[in-house]
Length: 239
View 1: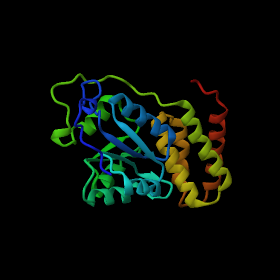
View 2: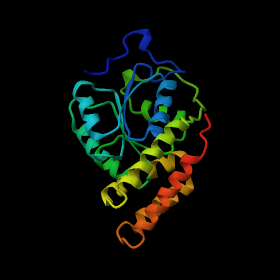
View 3: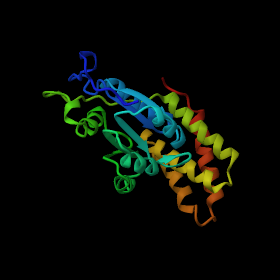
View 4: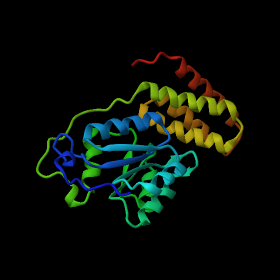
């Protein structure tokens, strides 16, 4: 089912809600990153649905075609570039296909796969988010006339961040010697560390990545990362 065109005033974009009438599918396994995108969509007037894996996204897309799809490149069951390639070649094609990641070097890969644009984590703010979508929408779906750019900075739910850290900690504790699992947790936490601007966590994640192929310090660095996660989880959540 395709996302309907805004044929009534109820779905006509306004300067305050320039994405009114637009449906966005976010393919993202991090609750923290998803919450940031959810808040941006809500403030922009867009409807949002979330899939936390490639398989969930594909099931969703069998029956429902959004106007905009935002795909994280690191997902639990594969690379987001695979889904981007599929959607870029599909007919009909979604209006706007964006990739997102905390790793700048991923942009070239995403664009080569067929993405229309790239959102670097952490997202700069509401104005950039809206512009990335609005500039790529078909002319008939764009806001008519000038609009003031919002200055809002979105602060995602700290409880969602805690849930992500708990998921990563439990996974590492259960599979500390499984290199495929360690790879996934490392990229998952790298994305979260960028979004949360947590330099200590990012450094610990990078240490795991550097030693991944040498094996020499991998176990020790995984243990260090696990200890840091436990420390973060003991900190009180400020709501």
